[in-house]
Structure formats: C-alpha cells, structure tokens
Length: 536
Image (cartoon, rainbow, N blue to C red; front, side, top):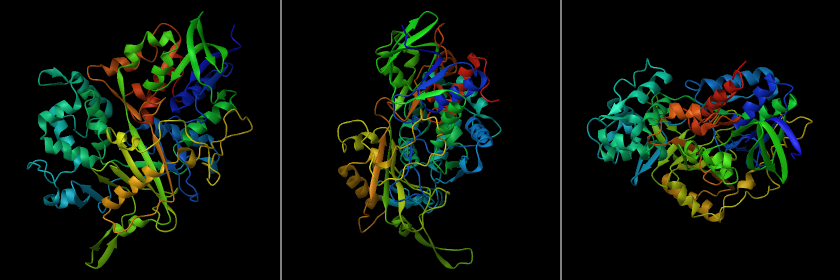
C-alpha cells in the first residue's frame, strides 16, 4: 500500500516541471500536487552561480539568454511573473551582445577581427567562392537554406509559416524530414564554405546531421535575423526558482533529492518509489529530457513501452567553463582606430564573444549583473562554450565523472529572495566550488586563451568552474529531432503517449529545442490535456 497519495506528481524540477506545477495548482487549488526533483536544486539545465569575490556577476553554467523577438512564451512568462513580484524581486533583463566587430577570430592560425569577414574578406583563410566571400557565417547558411527551400527566408513569414514550409518541402525529390541538415547543406555549399560557417559560427552540433525539416526553421529563428538577446541580471535560474516559490505559496510541495524509480501502473493511476517509500499518484507528469527518461525506463516498464517515441530525439553535448581574474586583461587586446573625425582612438575588446577553431571555440567577455562590461577590478570570462566533439577534449582533462563537489566556504551563493518560510525548496546554495574545474583543465584553457588572444604573458586564473551537460542524468545540453521523424506529429503524441494519465514535457520534444521556449511550448500542450490554459 502506498505511504502517500497525490492527485498529480511531477517528476523533474526544471522549467517545464515547475511551470506545470504552478499553473495546475492555480487552477486546481484543492488537488494535492508535488514536484519530485532528484538533484539538490530547482532549475534543471538552468544553473546560475556567483563566483568568489565578484558579487556583481552571475555565471550561467546552463542556459544564459533569450530571444524575445521570436520567443513569445518566455517573454510573456517573465512579464506575468514580474506583475506578481515586489519591485526588488523582479526578473530583470539586460542586452546580451554577441558579435562585436572588434572581437577576435583566431582560425587556421590566422588572427582576424570579426569585422574582417565582411570588411576585408581577403584575410579570411578559407577558399570561398565568389558567392560566399565577404559573407558572414550566418549569411552563408541562410543563403544555402534559401536554395534548399526557396522562399523560406522571406522576412514576411512568421515562425509557424517557416516550419510548415520545411515540413512540406522536398529536396532532390525526397521529403526534407527524411534528410539530414549536413547532407542537404553539402548539396548547395562547398566543403570550405561549410567548415567556414561551422568554425566561425562557434557551434558544431547546430550544423550536424539532424532532421533538416526541423533544423532549417530552427536555424532561421536564431541566426536568420539580427538577433537581439537578453541576459538575466540575477541569473536565468531565477525564473524556475520564482515558479517553484509561487507554487509553494499556493500549497504545492517541492521535494529535492527525491529520485523517482520503479513506476508501475496501479488501478487508475501509478505507484513509484522515492527513497524506499511507495508513493501513488492519479496523474504522473515526467518533465524530463530524453536521457533522464531512458534512465528511469530501466526500472519502469510503462516507459519501455514507449521507447520509440522517447528515442525520436538525440541528446547533444554541451560544455561551459568559466574563469575569473584580478582584472579584465582582454581589454588590452583591442586595436587602434579612428573616430568619425579621423582622430586616433582605442577600441577595446570588452563584450560579446570571440571565436576560434581551438577546442575553446567561443569565449564570452562576461558582463556585470547590470549588463555593463567589466572595465576594472575582478572580472570573469565564459572561457569556453562548446559542443559536439569538442566536449570530449575537456572530458580528457577531468577526473572520472562524478557528483559535484561540496560547497566551498569563500563563495557568495546566488541571491535567492524567493524562498519563504516553507523550506521544502532549500535555499539555492549551489556554489561555484561545487563545479570547480580541475588544475589540468584550467591550465589548458589558459594556454588556449593565451594563443587565441596573441598574448605574450599568461593571465593568472583566480577561480574556474565548469559544467559538462553530457553527464547523467541530462545526457546533453539540448536535444535534436532524428532524421525521418515527423516532429510535428511526435511532439503532440508524446505529451500523452498512452491511454494512461501519464504525460511527458520538456525542451527535448519541441520546436525550440535547446531553449526554455521549447520547454514552455510542450508544457502548454500538456496543460491542454488538463483543461488548463498555459497563461491566464
């Protein structure tokens, strides 16, 4: 017999899990609802920590930004939450720059500025044809996409119209969804152009062989426009922390360090195990990525029956490594220029990112909490942001995969004003040293940064922290649709894959994979099953 009974049990404390919990509790105040999270924190792949001795910076070891122009769900959610929060607890955003013209590109042993790709293409060490020469990396891919699906880059189209075009499109007489993105790109691009776009773009997995019908509209939503990103003054993790707190205030329960196993169908609902106790629920929501579902399926026959649906996406590796310094040394790697009056001036490297084909791939000059660049005093880099095969390079410089280390004593935890008297959600004490980078990894990233920035000295790292999202139970930083899958059908079916009251949601099975927007999209589909509107 079950020791506890719930109307709705939600497994997973990421954004989709706590968002569903909050909305369901709002509409069903008398239902007994609980969130079970295996880790010791709320947020899933949103993980915001403050570095030692830098109280006005927040390192985003997980998700770090949004695109309001093409992400209406997260934009509206933030607005709704801010209406309910006191002024001093509101979710504040800042402009998050990326490709600043003075920043560095170190590719094939050649030092460039990002502006050189369009202003001085003769310097670019790639054998590009006359069509691609002088184009940015994003423009090269967008132009190729237009050849694959004519008309899809028309700026008058909205996101949904582009998705429908890609779903219905054929290329070479074969439906696009049956082909890989890499495969079709190389039909219209030279190999050099492809490597140029991959190296300069900073990501490997975005151009790899995933479902072309999904990859094309996905790519256009991010890189097909002049993106205007927003970052979070108090960290992106503030969003799920706020949702969890509002859920608790309504009487919901959040249980951390509560790993679920052995899910079985029982009567009209389910039973499962948590810490050796049997718990029953009339409805069960699994707000989890693919790898987490696979791990849970080992002990849960009810999930083994839907393995083909679970396996319709592939987890993609993602790695982040932050380093801190006594001063923002990268400002000295700028260059002399002339202002509008022809007067000499110095243009500092101080914000956005630089790129390289070295394993660090992308380096972001991290801003303060108000979005302003660090100009003096202690400063921080997102020293390496990479994916794909490059994550394996860093894996060779760490100890065997293990649980995060215990917290250090010299660290400022992420400020969390959202936890009230109910302590079911522990204070967010995930701290920098729980993810401390080993010495060999720190030394290697320093070596590559020194080469990338053409320094004649070695910057001294104060502290370094990393997160490899390929570790279990996540399996990857994001998920992509497999070739041959009709995602527009699967994303609806997997929400309730059987006749049982079992539901699945999360970024993995959405149109916006890799974004919180995707988590909210699938949460909305799930809430429809309960007769609840995503927003009220």
